[in-house]
Each structure stands twice: as structure tokens, then as C-alpha cells.
Image 1: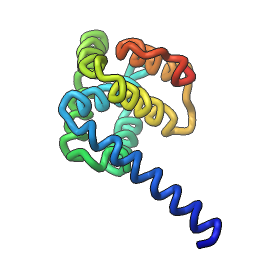
Image 2 (image 1 turned 135 degrees about the horizontal axis):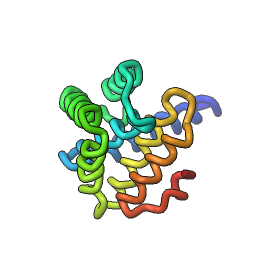
Image 3 (image 1 turned 90 degrees about the vertical axis):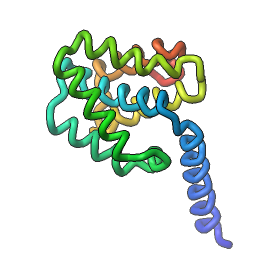
Image 4 (image 1 turned 60 degrees about the vertical axis):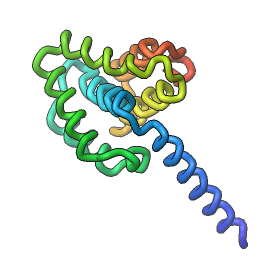
Length: 151
């Protein structure tokens, strides 16, 4: 086996391990926390525009990390959280932060939620200060140090 073949095999193994890692979090609290985090990132500037909402929904349905979950349920959760934060930003944000907080006592799940928030924030190629602020809030709500995620 050549060097490139070994490198490809290592990459495939790492991808499988990451997928297996996320699949062990396949529970309602984690699903709620991740979709609430996605909605909060989308609303970092105070509103969620339709383009951003569609792009995030597309990510949810195609993400390798979320393959272990029922993608239709995940998208429904995301849409529901977007609707809540769109209807009333302040009360919606409180409810979304409560959903995120349900995994605060589970450090591995909490880190995965923050990592997904970072991925969503970077999806458009621009991780702005408002998005960083939301990631910091999410990390703090999960009792994690935001600097662990470079925010």
C-alpha cells in the first residue's frame, strides 16, 4: 500500500470515528441542543434571513456528522427553533438557551454542540464577531471555556 493509499485510509478511518462518536449522542436532548445552537447562530445579527435558514437546513440534511439522526426530525426541530426566535427574539433566545443547557452536565455532548455551532458559523466562509459572541454564550451556558473553541 502506497503512502497516498495509507493517507486516504487514515482519513476514512478518522471520518468513521467522528461519525461513530456523534452517533452515540443520538438522543432528544442532544438533538434539541444542536438545532437550537444552529438557530441561534443563524440569528446572531438579530434575525434569520431565508437564505441563511435554507443554507443551514441544507447542511443539516447533508452533514456526515448528523447522519446518525433522523434528518427529517432534525430539520423540523431547526425550523421550529427558527420560528420561535423569529416570532420573539428575546423570549425565543431564552427558550433556545434552555434547550442547549440540557446537555450542560454531559461534557462530550456539550463540546459537540459548540463544535457544530462553530461549523455552522463558518459555513458561509465568514465567522464574524456576532457569531463568535453567540458561540461564547453557548459555550458558557454549557459550562465550557469559550477559549477552548478560540472564541
